[in-house]
Picture (cartoon, rainbow, N blue to C red):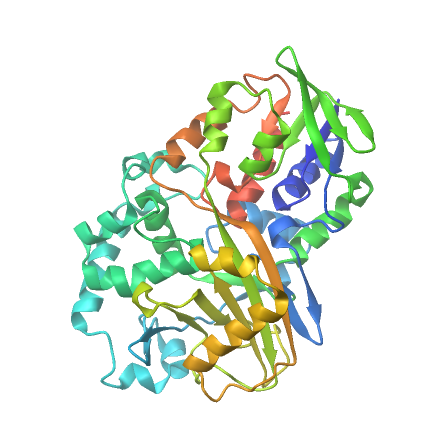
Length: 439
């Protein structure tokens, strides 16, 4: 049997690697000159640069199995995470202390009067209790266990089980920082699952998340055709025939379309209406991810990341200093500031020149950190038109139907991508493995 995997992102690489283990002949078509998709990265002057995704949650079982098979388990380290909110000109700690380690690392602000108040923590505790009671249903892969939440807005869910202050100062910034959207747009299923699993802690690879797709690529390098975009997945009489590329037609017994839902819809023009309709309704959010490397600390001591409530009017959903949060991410005494623009601002940034992007963001950062050095060691700009799959209410129910029909109604055609599960590295990896296992 011959299989073509369209897309060399993390889901396509996972699919091809799984097929290789099964002894199936596979070819990966990747349009870019490097594999990895939204998990691509590199390094410069001792700084680890992940262009897209940064970390793993503890529940990423399929991903950790791959990490182990790639010999990278020893490189996994926990992320030290103390987040602050920008509230009326002050940085206010937003996540509760979890033990002696946090207590030792905590900034003085934890013990100052500039806090969010007991009512804030009471509201957060109320939602924690609600989410904890159904934690077994909040699976990053099998979303069907929590479909009763799928049709609701997360903002409504928070207001019902928590309160407005918690929504404005924790859950909205959390959603923006992770999904690049708003709590009054995203479904309650995704929001509740994110909240629960973020509480369990996160991990990162010492040399960057991108070392996982790089290691995967090395395992299957002979089967990957880089700079080879697919033009069309050819289907005749409801049976897949192969893939048309700029260099010619490649025949196949099966095709795994491991792209975004948007790209998949464009690659297969004659899809049945039931499948095309689902793909067309999968939404994405843009991001202009800008990184500044500095030769000294920028964020006040003790904090590792900063979130911005919607009322702050920031063009960034969040910023993070990975020099502080993860071991080995940067040389000692430096800062590596990741700025994640979102919503309409991300669209604006993505249309600007590099020079204008740097100038605008540096001016915004100066508002929050007046003592920030004028010139960074270097800066990097990564434009993502479809950075994150954004699960609006009802999305999971329709996508679940597509998962159940994977391989049907078109014989030999399978889908993979993070949109088939909860949007995450785990969702992408598991979708690729699942598609390969169906062949």
